[in-house]
Amino acid sequence: MISTKGRYALRVMLDLAQQETDRFTPLDEIAARQGISKKYLEIILKTLVREKLLKGLRGKGGGYRLTRSPHEYTVGEILELTEGTLATIACLQTGVEPCERADSCITLPMWKQFDRIVHDFFYRITLYDLLQGNIPYMIVDEDQTARPTE
Amino acid sequence: MISTKGRYALRVMLDLAQQETDRFTPLDEIAARQGISKKYLEIILKTLVREKLLKGLRGKGGGYRLTRSPHEYTVGEILELTEGTLATIACLQTGVEPCERADSCITLPMWKQFDRIVHDFFYRITLYDLLQGNIPYMIVDEDQTARPTE
DNA sequence: TTATAAACCTACTTTGTCAATAGGTTTATT
DNA sequence: AATAAACCTATTGACAAAGTAGGTTTATAA
Image (cartoon, rainbow over all chains, first blue to last red; front, side, top):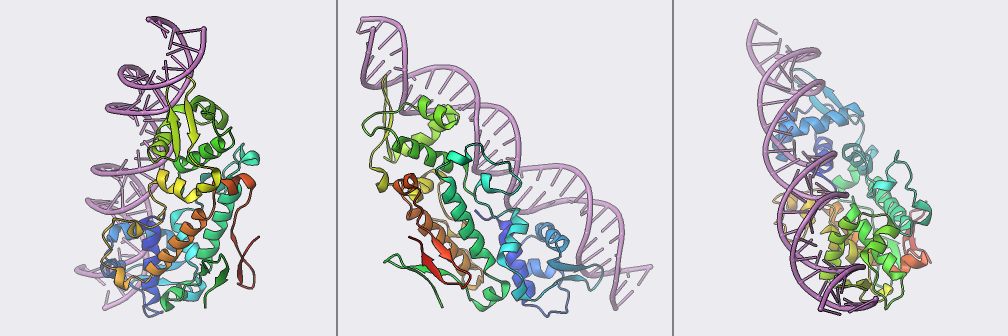
């Protein structure tokens, strides 16, 4: 379950991607446009600035802007940063000591596989893709044949 | 993020799938074998019984057993039942009034697509598959060609 | 028929996170 | 010097996840 944090972060990044690249857009403006609480957004943007996905400029005329061009951001990194992790299962989180049942765990391979699918999906989509409405995904047909769409 | 409820439910179902089919297995036994709090499991099993995925028998010599054979259960239905939903995004939950930004939401198609992938993944795996260590998944090659494994 | 083993039921607790709010401090511009 | 902005620290309310506690009903077996 992806929380508002990650979803809002994405929307802000997309919002900024649609602004003039050299201009700093104030938080007030983004919050108003996106209909999100200004104070809450502040918390989210702090993370994005700290991790250098955004540049913040203080003072009058200040605001936020992207530090790269839209095709250089993946949805995956944005979500992972703001959500803390993309891992769907506690035992697959990085830095967690391995479950002692891991060896005999009959479900673990499935969770690992799922995790990989999730990761691949989001890391293959860039902000630019979203702006273009171009989502690279897979279709699984009735006949169980998977193939990429184009 | 999938919670213990869903994960425990799956483990219990698999545990029962490995017992003799006509025997009723008491909760005590399952809990001990799986290393899960008996009282907590009780809550989870109640749902599974109510939804007819399990049959519960009271009294001495009672316990739980499957109502179908393992290949007739999908991981998806078990998770959806115990987790409440498999939807990863609030606005995609069934019974939720559509977001008013839906029309202009640039991220919605991505979430919808993701939702479908999640759904497909879990509904294509049966308990029998797990017992066999047979997880039907997709590989996405370096060359971006998706194909099913076999 | 009585002891026992089991599911079933209601209620509570603890802990933590999400989402948001409040108010102040620093920095740059005009 | 006034103003507009990011930045910082702390707090709150609501809710859910995870688990606990103790009692009630039902079937089996002695």
